[in-house]
Length: 302
Image (cartoon, rainbow, N blue to C red):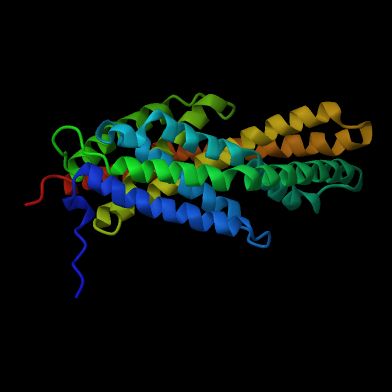
């Protein structure tokens, strides 16, 4: 009978992060293999999520990791994320355009078709760049992380539950500040900062879900908030794209692009109204309660 795996919350921070990072590296490898299948609609998403989680993990626990979260490792992960941004944004915008086409008037459709063709070309170029760079990038980052985890730990070990609780409390306060600072539906920077902070908080909580029901509850509501902020951020990117393309398009194509720009603004305003309600309504209060319960559960074991 094999030895029982120790619960994550009983480990030191370094040992817990080593285990979690191993899972994320395996997920990144699996995501790479999915990238080879053009029929897989989630192929890029699976790879990006694994890289984002690993990057957020090392960033959050950097004070306890030494060279494991060193500059070259973090730069490698940042470049992997950046290399996939163009393909991801093109996919999201193509999906939105496909949903708009049928309801456009006849004279508006040429502009939509023109932009779809342009984004399809951009997507193909972006995927070729991913194929060229990502496999080597993941292998290099994985090698550095695994080798540096073999180095001796500096200082006294800190319990994972203690480090996680401190990060969760500080991260929740930062999330409140970021959300409260969003000035309006067109506050691109404020929405982006809030989205990033909510994502970091969610990734902080997720590894604890198997051991704490409080973590499962908090992760679920944080994901809902992240999805809402992500949709709003995508609207901002779409508005920028449409504004730029209107200037390059022919007159016949501009008609449809202007209609699409108006629809993107409508979607943006609708999403912001939902965000305002979420911040001040029952969802926000529930999220705060769940984070408080999780913080209590992370206290020293009885």
